[in-house]
Length: 58
Image 1 (cartoon, rainbow, N blue to C red):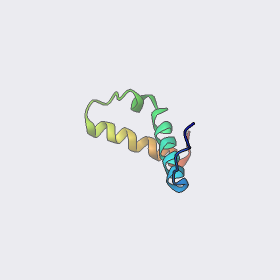
Image 2: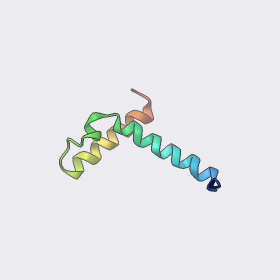
Image 3: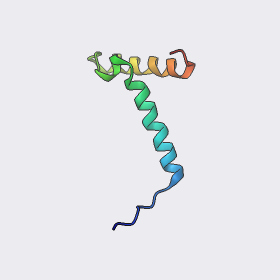
Image 4: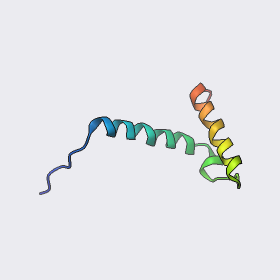
């Protein structure tokens, strides 16, 4: 029987927040499938989605 690994609860909590942020970003189909072919358009799409999430519009 293996002993459980030790972990820092504060870091784990922050990691969970980051993973949830990526989950919310990927819910937007344009980002999940990366329809924007160049990096500037993709970055703009990510920034727009972040603003929508921040403003709690959708």
